Length: 463
Ligand code: GKR
Ligand code: MG
Image (tube, rainbow, N blue to C red):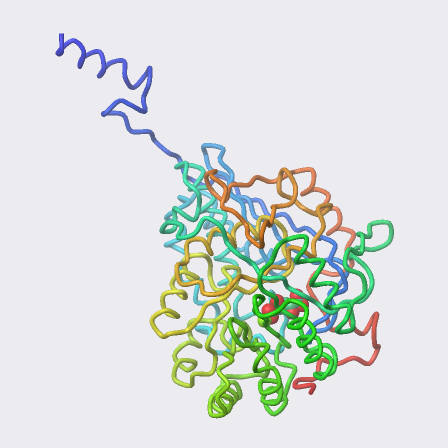
């Protein structure tokens, strides 16, 4: 009888119920048969920073890679023509390749151009730096391929890249001074959810509103917009209103001189303590190093954080030697992808640096990718940044609408890959918006001249 049973299993098992048959191995096809790039535009409110003013639309490129099994992996990256071209240039290598092997074949792209040592973000808006083009391009391909592979093998991306160490990823409330308006133009405008905000008092209201809606437990103020006294006053009022339980960060994107940074470091030593930081107060590792030394000598331990002076692995040795930046802001979109962010996390841990996460205007595909990489990066020591509250459901391209942020956190879905799919109707609306949009790259300075001050120049340091 037992011989007959084994014969039966051997003959019929693979046909009738392959998963429990010991001889059965399912063939998974991960050859990429198609690459699709969708250039889209989404409404973006008139947010201010030291770069200038956000345009009424932010641009994104959405990538789809399809396997011969018909499985589609997706990614979202920087928008406009140049990022699209960089992706297009790799079409010949991507189509026909295995979704996992291609990540090894292209991995030299993760370094970026020129090894990364010259790649400062002081003068260029993110996404427009030619020195990280290939790192950004690789990141988009990697995300889409990992989504495809995850779906093919039935595992979430965060588990595929090493395993999640957290089920939920926490984000901070990302506050911006802004003009009135919710983004978009003509008959395509969005509701101005937060209203104009150009004073300390209105910033407190903006924060209250954002925290009530999303439950964030830490606060980041985008500064470098008003006179430093006004921004200091804003931080003071935020501390007064929300108390020590909400760590505070301030980020003027290099708008301050070293002396101003020192002064503000002293003035805000209480407010920025206990989980806060000074993010890119001034430009360059040398000034950040002097700032750190001077503040420490005065007994002030507020760390410097950066996504402007430290943007590549090549910056790390000098940074560690100088102790200029104590908290590095990772971002898989331009650090060369998710696994490079994990490597960065390990290096930061070894050298006693903190790790936080940078963001740029984005939709739900990026948010979910950020959540997956954050979930699988053990040494992530701060809440991540996200621009997500500034975008509207009208522009969301994820099926089912906006990704929920609850108690300040995004939960990792128990679905394979990134756990989301594209809403193709919404995607084509995004493409139509892009077609109508008169610009093809982010230019906050031009927008500033158009709407605020025709003579505006980005002067650094300004104060
Ligand atoms: O959205 O205007 C903005 C920000 O200023 C952004 O461009 C920065 O890259 O969020 C970023 C930062 O932390 O510096
Ligand atoms: Mg920053």
